[in-house]
Length: 393
Ligand code: APR
Ligand code: PHB
Image: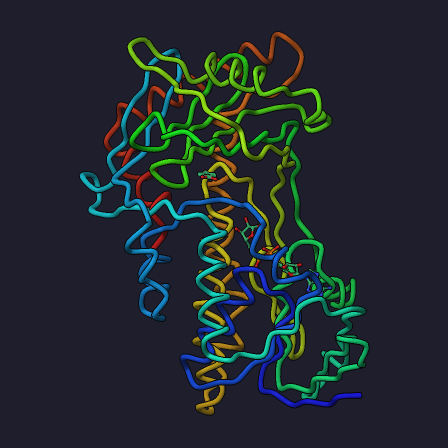
């Protein structure tokens, strides 16, 4: 039986939990992280790969920018493609801001390394993780680790345990409402050992469905196609995947170079927001409180935005100022709803909804009209640029 005390106990060692613990350390506040999976599992999880400019600046300010600066690929814009034509939206020209392509996996690796070097307390492979007394000033977390029962008492518990975690469900049902929207499609994503065939990301609407070209490095491509959420990855041979990518991404005079596929999976899409990110001495960050469909590349950036706000609020609390903490849920959710709106807009603009044929044909033409507008109006382009590179308000 081990009993520890720490100011903040964080459930979950995904990007949100690891970053919050690191930001608190930077502010001179100790924390303990409790994770139910292994460190190898956490390090191997492949997710999105675009960092907003504000996310890059925050990671850099916290001393996590060295490999990000050396290996991250700074992009001035993206391509939007429809009707067999590709249009560049140059964020840097439009509003003087950029994004950086750097895999979430790399962000997590940098955080794990930084914590290891600093000697942080992170319990991986914790079992039976449970939270207690969240409505009191003395909450605690219990779990098993290495055959021993652990109790950690804290001033605050932070739920950074993702969509399927235990913290959000620990909030009594009458104190929380869940808002969500599912989509009638999913993304089939691959990693391939081949140089990206485009200098910047390509988002394409095609009559067969959405497709996208992204990358992880000058040698590794990341590509996606829209599929049915009930589809089985076993039905998608490498040849079939490349065939669909060639059709949907193809434009005259451009070649999509194929290469060995090293990973493939199907991910469902959903939009989800909890009505509150706080309850008593519990605070939620990242996917525990909200999920976006990946089309706007906002999942990781939203987690970083929550962490930025919560770390500042907790630091203020230890300086005897609770105003920010009292407002954390409200301010984080206000930003999140703006991000939700953008992610849904991008998703609806670029995916084909299977429906009855007549409304389907109408929807497709309307989507093309929207893309025509966005790619030709400087006002619409600035709106896209401002949201894609990260809202400053
Ligand atoms: N006890 C301890 N840890 C848990 C528990 C539990 N009961 N349940 C889940 N976890 C862990 C998971 O194993 C995972 O490592 O919490 C972590 C949550 O990490 P993520 O799911 O990556 O969520 P978050 O850190 O909020 O990151 C958000 O991930 O899904 C993407 O698009 C999303 O990029 C965004 C980012
Ligand atoms: C990715 O590279 O995985 C990626 C990029 C942009 C998105 C989604 C995913 O919008």
